[in-house]
Length: 79
Image (cartoon, rainbow, N blue to C red):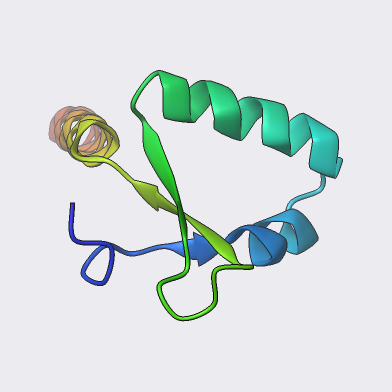
């Protein structure tokens, strides 16, 4: 995967905006990475920084979910 093209967030940024403890987030990210939902990689400019980016698997699952929600909303509007 081309990390420059993938939307990604710095881990420090993620830790600061989510209302969970850093150790808990690390465990969840490790599991998500092991199950191929996200990629965690070093910043190409500053190796001290790490980023998390969605994989194709996650993007496809989100797309499928969004299509399902839109279809459900359309069905509700027909009634």
